[in-house]
Amino acid sequence: MARLDKTYQAFFRRVRDGQTSGFPRFQGLNRYHSFTYKEYGNGARLDNGFLVLSKIGRVALRWSRPLDGVPKTVTVSKEVDGWYVCFSCGDVPVHPLAPTGQETGIDLGLESFATLSDGTMIHNPRCYRRAERRLKTAQRKVARRKKGSNRRKKAIKLLAKAHQKVRRQRQDFQYKAALCLVRDYDTIYHEDLQVTNMLKNHHLAKSIADAGWSGFLSILAFKAACAGKRVVAVNPAYTSQTCSGCGAVVSKGLSVRWHSCPDCGTSLHRDHNAAKNIEGLGQSLRGEVA
Image 1 (cartoon, helix red, strand yellow):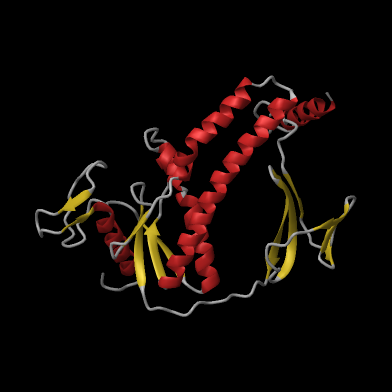
Image 2 (cartoon, rainbow, N blue to C red; image 1 turned 120 degrees about the horizontal axis):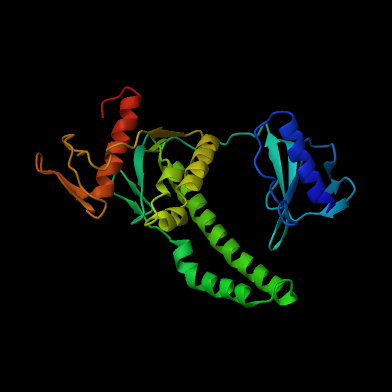
């Protein structure tokens, strides 16, 4: 009751001050799963490999890797399989990779996760699709349990672990794919996709979310920055319709997976054609001849 009273007090305070405010949001017990110490050393610090938290004490850590740089903030979060701590560091040293002199364009898709401008296709793992049956069974167990019972809590935990496994499988694939691209190419061009708008297509929303394009592009940009490489986004308009051979526009629907140009005779996979156009656009932005 006290929490609800504070929520309504904040609501009426905003109305009194003339601010636009919606209906108070219910703040459930499990709304937050993490807390952050905004300044390292002020409430959170390291002591001989142990994490010392204010009002909590010394906490033993199982390190995934040693820290690089100077710790700035500390975030403690609760996952279904335990507690985790994340250190945000500044002045992290960069470890550039040897230049290869190569560059490529990548077209992200659903048939294959990505297609490079040389025709190489990266397989789409479809982590969620492969786990759908297992997730469906776990969700059914939760629905059949009585609310508030210990059996329901156990079923919820099993469901959360199933979703966590899918999420980690996707992230593992994305990190490995991004690392391979960064090792092989100095400059990588990709489409500046508006994934949020693409998810409004209810026929493809599940597959697009399963692919995780936004997460992959963020990881790719991060790894490229750490390796001293470049990632450039280009305008995605007509990259699939334009012929990479002569520049003519060849209209085709999403179900047409092969590009055949009636003007110059170019014939190749639709995604391969788009990847070559993306590379050409990226080079033109840099002032080179595509």
